[in-house]
Structures are given as C-alpha cells and as structure tokens.
Image (cartoon, rainbow, N blue to C red; front, side, top):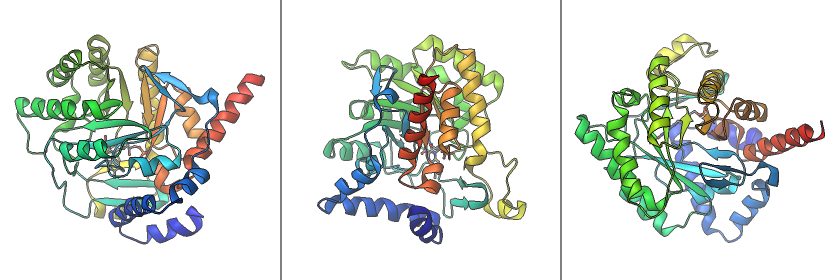
Length: 352
Ligand SMILES: Cc1cc2nc3c(=O)[nH]c(=O)nc-3n(C[C@H](O)[C@H](O)[C@H](O)COP(=O)(O)O)c2cc1C
C-alpha cells in the first residue's frame, strides 16, 4: 500500500513538506486510541532472538536503526518506533536553535533511489530536545547526535558547542554520536582530522568520566574522508576510548548517477544519500573493520535499500546498521522486511 498509494501522493509534494506532514500525521495518530497498537501490529513484529546483539555494552533487540536527520527535533521517536526500529538516532542538535540553509534544500532523485539535501543542521536546539525527551519517555533505544552552531568558528567556540550539547543530552539518551561529517556546514568536516578531533572529543570523554552512568560515544565519519585522515581518526578513536564509528554520512560525489546532469546542476550543492552511496560506504566499513580487526564497533549506514544490502553491510563488519533514504523509498514495512531476510539467512547458515 505504501508504494502503490501513499508514496506516489507524497512524492508529488515538496519533499520537505511531505516529510513534515508524515511526522505530523504520526503525532496525530498517537492521540487516536488504538492507532499506535494497529501500527505496531502491522510493522513492529517481535524480532527473532538470534538477531539480538550486545554492542558497546548496550543490548539491541536487532541490528536495524533509524539514522540521524529524520527526527531532527526529537518530536516523533516513539511514533517512528512503531515501524520496528531497534534504535533511533535523533538530531543532530546544536546548542542554539538555528534555521539551517534557505529552501529549497531537499531534493528527490527517483531514478537513483536517492536524495540530495543541504538542510544545514536546522534544528530547535538541544534544550528543546531534552525537554521533549524528558516529557515523552522513549519506548525505544535512543541515540542523540550532536553538532556545532553554524556561527561557531573558533576552536574554543566549537569545543564549547559540542560540550554543551553532550552534557545537556547525556542523561536523556542511551548513546551519543558526534557529527563532524555533515557536508552542508562549511568547515565541519575538517573536524574529522586528527589535528582537530582530540581538542573536540577529549573534553567529552573527560566529562563522561565524572558521570555516574557510562554512555557510549561514537563519531560519524564522511565517505569523502581522505585515507590518511581516516587512519588518523581510527588511531585516535582506539587510543582515546571512543566507543565506535558511524560510517557514514552523505557524500558530495555525484558519480554514477542516472539523474541527468542538467537536473543535478539545477539542484546544486548538497549531500547525496540513498542507493548510489552504498558501495562507497560499504567499502569504508570493510576497510575500518579490517584495519581494527573488529576492535571498533561500526554502525553501517548509506544506501541500504534492500534486505540483501543490509546483510552485506553486516557481513562487511558493521555490528549495527541504520537506514534513512531506504525508509523513505521503501516505507514502514522495510525494517520488518530486512529482519525477515536476516533471520532466514541466519537460519540457513545454521543448517549448513
Ligand atoms: C534530509 C537528510 C537530513 C540529514 N540530517 C542529518 C543530521 O542532522 N545529522 C547526521 O548525522 N546525519 C544526517 N543525515 C545523514 C543520514 O543520517 C545518513 O547518514 C545518510 O543519509 C546515509 O544514509 P541513507 O543512504 O540510508 O540515507 C541526513 C540525511 C538526509 C537525507
């Protein structure tokens, strides 16, 4: 029903408006008695126990989560959990609310099953997010993504921004992710470099040492990262106590797309997500997994639009996976479809 009726209607609308409408619709459904139960019955099936796993000290019922950027303001994580996600990454949050880039800033590339976005980390700020999470207790494991405000440029301002988001969010989520890889904020990706990262992440790790509870901290990397920079980042993570990597964010590359060059030119700058990203991020996951001999847990994300791709991402060394664009194209039954396939594959493996 999603692909034949709902998606064609949504895809006729402006992408950002369609996104907002869906989240609003989910929130309205929450207020209708029984609607949540019906959604859960349809989409949130009990996962097979063999899909459960413990990663960086957290017990996940299965490996499939929702990537950052869909529930940017933490307004809908419980409603989205009806679709069966094992965990949901909310944010990215900045200390102060910010509008992001001017619209239009989100574009569909149906021929490629992809999106291009230059949202620019628009969000209502971390304080508003924790206020919401505090009021609406998460019924799903929650990760919180943190970033800096666009106007924060000096090393001191940037450090302060991440620390403020980290300390504000710490008690409200199960693990935290440091976004230093969004391609739509000028200069953000340079923070991935081993020259910058310690100044940014060390204070977060120090703050954590003073906390009563231990919350894992992950860093999200860009698929466009240079190999030397990546090696430096891996080295730092292994020495410092960073718990894992999210691999990865959207790419600036437009290689191998079916969408005509004139259309791409009209769209302009932005991060590409969805199917064309898959092989690139898969290779990055495999490289990091091999380089660390599995010693650094990885959440694999980018272009997972079929259950087979989910399996390949896990086979390449990801402990968990996340989806975003695949969810937009495939709809609310997608998590269940992936889990059914993963389970069948695991069963097949056991029989052999
Ligand atoms: C519209 C949009 C907004 C996004 N916003 C964020 C964000 O705020 N923080 C972040 O870490 N990643 C963000 N992402 C990146 C996704 O979390 C994910 O890494 C990327 O889309 C690749 O996965 P996919 O191919 O399954 O979409 C965003 C992606 C999209 C499409």
